[in-house]
Length: 416
Image (cartoon, rainbow, N blue to C red):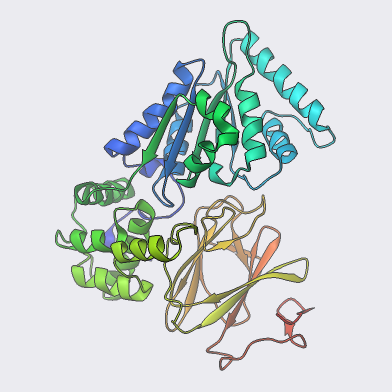
């Protein structure tokens, strides 16, 4: 890796939400202050929205690091759930084993717990990330929980964080009572060009660069054209550009390295991507962190298998693919053993590399936990209870496995 060349202690542009690297722009500082206000007010109920990759989760993690010990926190990240599943998940966060309880028991247990914590002088905070995925029925349960109170105060503070469509749901006529209970709403926008430059330098300083200027000053304008100031896109582009400089054995990143990275990622200018998305696909989610040109050739495939059965297939183009538990990933694996952003696949015209994104359970190749690994045709990467089977189209002459093929691991594969 490029750490030694650039004299860094750790990777500065990981996609995982590390609060140590949080750059507090004016907007991020305001979002964090709004989260902190839930502690100050007994009726604290805050909604934070932002586009994919804007830094919502990193702000949450930074906020949680500073929460005092007398505050009891439930943090929910899996939001494509039923009302019963949601209530169970909240109780699990509070230390209960509620899986045999009926809905009435779940509600009664939660209400009793909240009142007991209030009586003991402890504050209780519920944080729901990716809240845009909550159904109207689950949001109604959130409203009911927000209404639990003693004779003087509300007993539950709530933070909902999600993509902009969360506001559309909260403004639905069916949720007018919930909307009236929200104390503050804030939308986390993108960074300006000046903030982008400060953001990059901040992350480099945290990683060990000190005051060294690793990126050429003229590189930032080009970077802004293609990232639009979205932190996750900035991370992706900076990391790829540093790899480009590394392969040329240079300890600084030039405009040419940025252009090389953009070409490798097959990105178009940010304004063109967002304009096209709004015009052609108004009901779709925002573009993924690594936009892929759909006309680009497929160089490899990933089969996702669990218990010997293939459950997903993803064609790989040249670029970067993020794998994780939440819906904002390029490849989503909905499992509690998989981290929010678990790993990334870096696909070039000649090779593919998988890299762990500081996940909890790690990635394993040939029974060995690895941080970063080149993949060969047929390699199996174990993530929790799932296997990622790498099939290199170049090594196979462009062929695909059929139902008679046996995939790595000895499992006959069904036709797909």
